Image 1: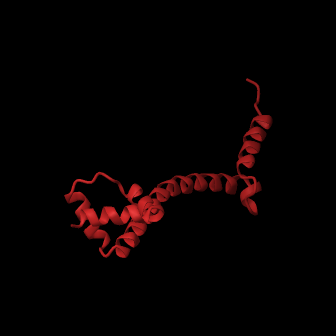
Image 2 (image 1 turned 30 degrees about the horizontal axis):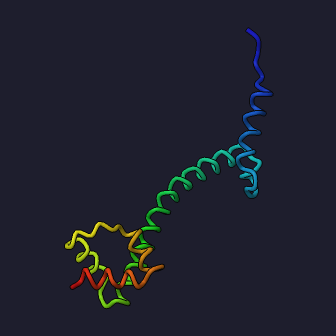
Image 3 (image 1 turned 180 degrees about the vertical axis):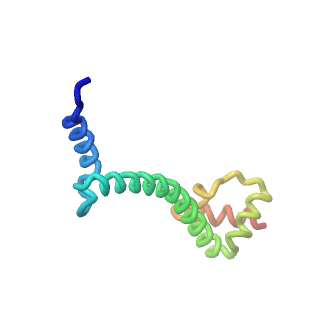
Length: 115
């Protein structure tokens, strides 16, 4: 059986690895072991931050609703409880949009729900 030295195969694999780490600092861009680790970690961080993005968006919505509720003389928790009690099927994303862009409509909604 002939000996396989893997020259072109290894080079191709290494080059594709370095294409992924283009723009990284120091050894992360040109040392195989560090580059491989950097790619693995970047993938994990990308996954984590996709989840965090959703969490942060929901948190921002609650802050906007809370601010709108305080302007209209109630608290966030009381407003959400009143909305649930009256079976208002608006989610937090929509409520946050109303509070931010249409404060008059949001005020009417708060007034109607908290009677």
